[in-house]
Length: 212
Image 1 (cartoon, helix red, strand yellow):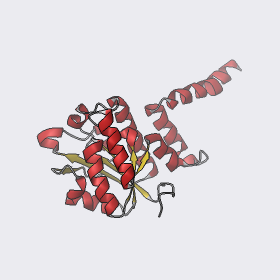
Image 2 (cartoon, rainbow, N blue to C red):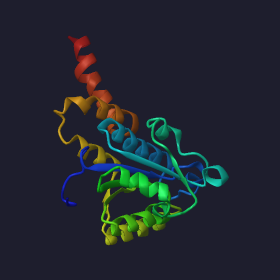
Image 3 (cartoon, helix red, strand yellow):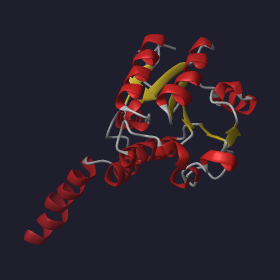
Image 4 (cartoon, helix red, strand yellow):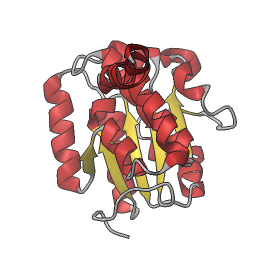
């Protein structure tokens, strides 16, 4: 397996870390709403394409609060792994869940980039995983903190992506009709392109038929 291979429903898993209220409050590198949308693009894409998914929180009950329900409700059978460690890889339950996916390509996003994304990624790379970071679904306390973290992640061997790139890479071909409608629903709900999709359907479909 190589980083030049596309991620696919057959070779990739999704890992989401610490999308919790207390962690969102510290995000100043991105618009928080855009991060929330992009995480949902990843989560809904993973559900649509059947990617094994790992979800983890830090200090859920004592500090940071629950993982965002917009994601966890998509995966009612996935156990959310709560940790005390900043580095998820230090938690035995998290390691077991990642290893249980039996996938070596991991799409990983979390809050904050400099710690909860950085630390496990470095260990995952050392353990032989390929880690793909959709950076627009991550966030940090400042633009510089996020950017320097991404710089270090790339230097260490992680692959930077964005959330829609993950979705499109999984779809690959619009002729794949079994997932086409699902991808379009994700785009309509969570991306500016959804505006164009709505307009095109109106202009070329409903509106055109009415005009005729």
